[in-house]
Amino acid sequence: MKYSYDIHIHSVLSPCADVLMTPNNIFNMASLKGLDIIAITDHNSTKQLSICYELSQSYDMLFIPGVEITVKEDFDVLCYFKTIEDAISFDKILETYNQKNSFDHETMGNQEIVNIYDEVINEYPYLLIDPLNLSIKDLLHILKDFEHVLIYAHIDKDYRSGINYIDKYPLDGVEYRHIENNKKHQIVLKNSDAHQIIDILEKGDNEGMILDDLSIDSFFRYFSK
Image (cartoon, rainbow, N blue to C red; front, side, top):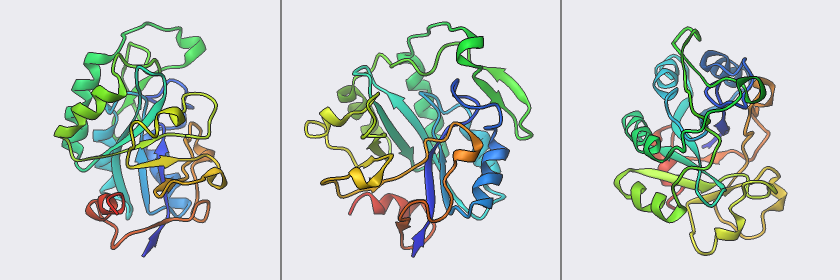
């Protein structure tokens, strides 16, 4: 069966995201837009995912725990986990590679962690969009301990694209902003990379994902074909 998806969405934890990108707003908008599968993929952190997972239990859609990682080589990859527990455990590893740079909140925006009611309960103090002190090679080694899917993010973007690394480090798939730019890759995704609520994709904005059923196991099998 074909399922509609958007698995590259940022919450208010990402400094570049709009203040309306709270978990409740994201799930409500995704539901209104007819999506079956979503992932919230903040920059270099999974600290908002436990609340997102809790909220997802009230919706008839599949929630994939994810994160957008900026490696030392200064390009982005999207990582998805099979369990929320793995995503939370992986966050502790990410912390050790964060450069822990301070930043101007007025220029960059806040990095808010919210509760189930979208109330701010904490702010992350170090800039999350900086590249980690973690190479793609070392990231792949660390991820061997986790069931995961790893794809290149926005490969047709001028900024933070890993297009020059694809042959050396083949991953599970690639993401294009404009799917027609794809030349040769088998597993290709089109996501929104939404930082504003209106930018979340709606059903029909991409070709969808053909899965056996709407489950995390089927999602992972999709990338193993």
